[in-house]
Amino acid sequence: MSGIFISFEGPDGAGKTTAIKRIMPQLQKMTDKEVVLSREPGGSPISEKIRKIILDIHDEEMDPRTEALLYAASRRQHLVDVILPTLNEGKVMLSDRFVDSSIAYQGGGREIGTKEVANINNFAIEGHLPDLTIYFDVTPGVGLARIKKDHEGEMDRLEKAAISFHNRVYDSYAEIVKQNPNRIKTVNAEQSPDKVAADALNLITTRFPKIFKVQGE
Ligand SMILES: Nc1ncnc2c1ncn2[C@@H]1O[C@H](COP(=O)(O)OP(=O)(O)OP(=O)(O)O)[C@@H](O)[C@H]1O
Ligand SMILES: Cc1cn([C@H]2C[C@H](O)[C@@H](COP(=O)(O)O)O2)c(=O)[nH]c1=O
Image (cartoon, rainbow, N blue to C red; front, side, top):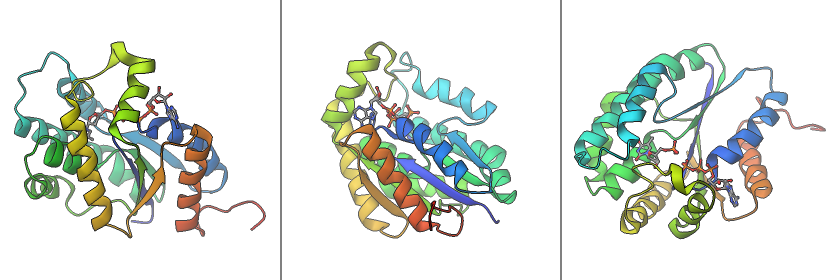
């Protein structure tokens, strides 16, 4: 596989989507390779159908293991439909969330256990981990306040979960970051949108200097 795979992770309201929208056109200008953007859960027709089920605010009674399996199923289909073909064509694959979200949210947040959730995801992803993961570090209070300010009426089932859940997600992410220092690089996501995007872009171009040519270098 000649492409590169970059994922973006963080608690709810971390500003990943905002930053990715800013850096994607900049990355595209810096490389001859096509830059492809996708997201999880979703990113392909079947995966987007699974997303609707998982995030439906009416699915209050969904069992945590059902939730974990649905995320893993959605991921498997996204991998096969989008991620692997993109990488096989030598392109740059950007994914707004990937497997670390399941470890943090279902393993930590839902208290299923990180090993159990990693096991079902290993079945789904067959070893295809990102080459680089940018972690947007925001405390749950700040992230959720951003969402409530701008999108309170659109909050999904996960975003509406108790603060204790979001605190466990945050702690679990901290552990994942600690355990994967080479793959995962952290951005302070409590800065201005411009600074967050600039820091994320810098981490990517520094990691892949032969793929992304910074002007003047
Ligand atoms: N650096 C920032 N400072 C303040 N507000 C921000 C910042 N980045 C994004 N926001 C705002 O926070 C909200 C959430 O941003 P965004 O959708 O980009 O986050 P996200 O990480 O993709 O969240 P989620 O994963 O929960 O969808 C939006 O209203 C956005 O305008
Ligand atoms: C991939 C993935 C996501 N989640 C959670 C994280 C968010 O609360 C929602 C997705 O919404 P977004 O606005 O598109 O970020 O789902 C999760 O719990 N487990 C996962 O594997």
